[in-house]
Length: 522
Image (cartoon, rainbow, N blue to C red; front, side, top):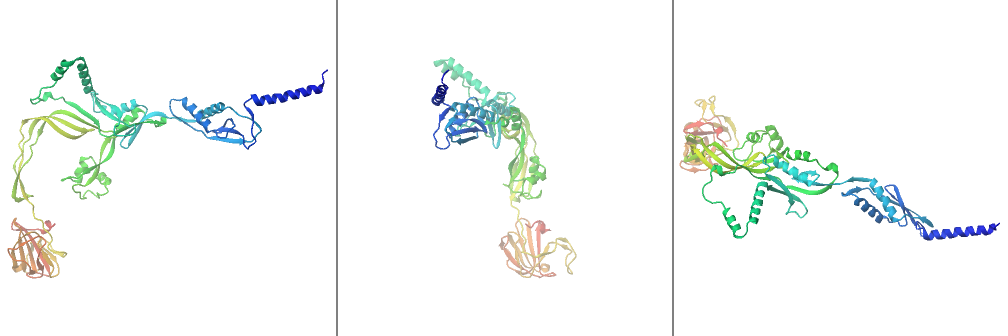
């Protein structure tokens, strides 16, 4: 029987040797320096992913991110919250970096937020819509044209915007028929060589001269373009932010109500502006804070907010059209320098004519914006309206005194004094004696002095069959034959003649007959 002490000693030596060998040949266990925390337990998003000998594991996180991103063709959004807890030990087990990276990648995949889809953002003024592909963008843009291009002759392609530094795409409208013709001409030219090519090219030049007949014009759509700037940029977006093509077409082509500004021109009225824009008067007033009611004054040049239904993306186009129509000749005016501008007489009644026309008509969406006649043939001449009109500006009248109280109106009244007329031929303003009396209008004084019942009186002739009279004055400051200007002081008020108190009597005569001055004073 062997010595038990020797066997025990051999066993202990074997165990010690095994420990020493393990320290050298097993990399997961190592002797660590006694310098504080020297082993670190790493968690990612609350999940243990390994043990590291280094506290800084950011490089491992980056490697894990790259590994996850490399497995997807599209960008991904990942949550990565790292926590590191240290401990001081003499011997410890650490994981290889590859193991920690792999574990991190698995946790990241489990906590992946969402995948961003490659998409295209279309911007039209302040409106934007996101589409899944460039083909969807072209589908949207062509659908806008399809409303008006029944022959499908116009298309669009996306090109880099030369005026933008960044990679922004914009639209380039194409005419398929023109491109086809250019391609055929190019092929023909390549098939022909040398002198033959020059001769073929010269033969293709159309002969000049001679007026085109109506049948020579190609009718229909001749140009199309977008009426708003279109920008397209590539983007990466969550799938729920991408709009299906058909929904995008409906949003872009549906007519929206947008404010637009109208500038008032001569002859405009609020009611006419409302009618022309299809608006109720109360809505027009609500949209414009400066318009209080339907009687508010508007002036030439005023800007008024009106609305017009328009889609998000407008189309401007031109059509060459043939039509026949009745037409009116321009009015012919005969100026009469001895008449006022308020006077006019029709000397010849008009009669409509008839004509055949080819014209290029411009549109923005469905609204006509212009018309240019290319050819016109009159089949029946129109007879113009001839109007004789005055050129002289009619005189304006101002109140001859400042202040005063209207004490007697024009027309029937009770006689204020014995012998006074019950048919008042002017108006009276009660005012203190000595109030300045001014000429109501430019003219020549025809009488200045005593006028029986008028007391002291001044008559002014305005050279147009019109006259003004100023009565019951206390002092006359002008004389007969003197020219006076509007607003010039001609007398002082008084109480002379047949009068019941200090006042000014004022008359306007037209053609020798008194009229109500209140209808003429400005």
